[in-house]
Image (cartoon, rainbow, N blue to C red; front, side, top):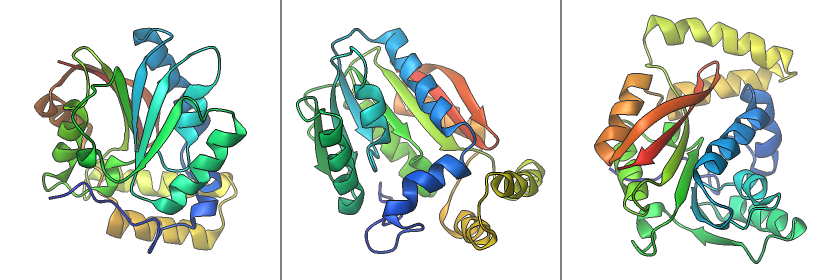
Length: 234
């Protein structure tokens, strides 16, 4: 069991410099989802708060949450040096260097103090097999949060081999075509889903959150087979 995901440095499923564009095409409501996530955080936090951004990637959340009049301090964690290099460029472009730090590694590599006021884990957990790794990730996040801290989880959901998920595949293919994705990229994406992506049923998502020490879960976003939940650290 580990928190390790697909290696975006040595064997990326998509070129790192293409990730942002592909994510906007592949995930329904990608931009709106980040706005909803920000709204969930703003509903729970004051203008001054500390956030742990797990799987910071190319810095989408860091920039989104760093804009406006908020004075949130953020730590972005990601194992990919290539991803964090892109994130660092964005941080500098948006003058966020005073409020954002980056850490190359995994959540369990971080010290357990200080505790954070909130955390997010957006589009990370589906890369982890359901062998205890998903729960371990959620637990490592919970251990670094203050009591009553909000946690944003965005993940692909649905159980492989079920009728529900099988019916979703042609819908996804049609959606990707409508978004202008090339046929070869569609086939590559489906191959990645079959071999390197591990979605679980929503009921299992909620159960893992409970086991990790979260409660009061609500789903705030749905984009076909992608869901977003906000939960509260017990």
